[in-house]
View (tube, rainbow, N blue to C red):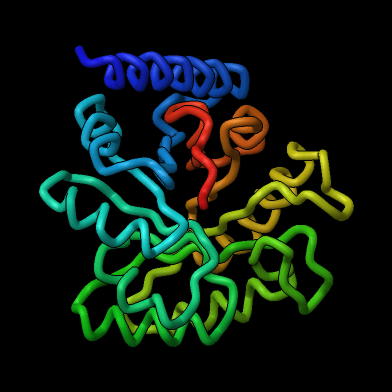
Length: 239
């Protein structure tokens, strides 16, 4: 086993132990939580190693990095998640490889994604990114729509050809009432998910939690956790 494969296998095993322990503590079956490995800044060779170790969900946040990496790994049975703030001029490229876009936060993006998905003949899962640091009617510092904007986006996704409303996503806020209160933030997201599922039961995906706070997310009820550093190591700085 190569050094890098050994390193990733050990890291993955530690993350798996954390997820399993968090599920047990919350009284949840382990299979209720899907691990998404965030492979941003790391090469396609790492994606291949991770696939060999059983990973099936990977995430990227920059199209210029993701598109060539996805192309290089097109022979692998992977589900690609796009988790970064998405500009409309990158939509056509992203729709070419992403199976799920987790960062839908404005009507114009819904329209652009729908048009591109139609032209590509693809169906795209979409998560509404919720910004728990945003004022009513606004957007968050790290993208996302304020909770009062969820219904408008959900209605638009309901009517958008080629798109499927899959659920909600959040990033633990750095400012506002939930700063430093990850569990409270994730509990709030679950409340919003419950409200959404009351009228759209299929929109049951809840993406929350990263390397530092995945336990809080699982305790709150997250169905997907997005883990990068704990699996791949400390990221190299981008130039």
